[in-house]
Image (cartoon, rainbow, N blue to C red; front, top):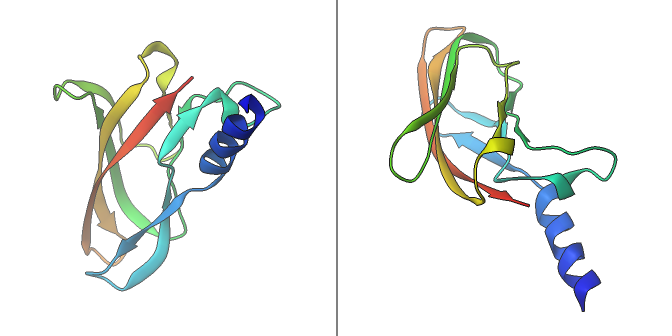
Length: 116
């Protein structure tokens, strides 16, 4: 029974969802994981919350908050990732905003779960 539970966690970890930008018709442009855990990659411990996009960006900002609204991480660099190793298991809120290269603005909110 233990291996079945682990298999389910690995499936969840290996999938990420696409954030759909309906206001600018940029479908499948954003890739934001909904879970961070060391079980996501068997080769190394991975607690990083990595956001990826295929869209050309003019500006980018990410903020990660705990359930009390305290800011845990902020960055204007899409190549800088939130390392959740020092926080407890739980649900965290992110906000991603900025401008695409054509100056249209974007803003996304969501949750990411940290599991050990």
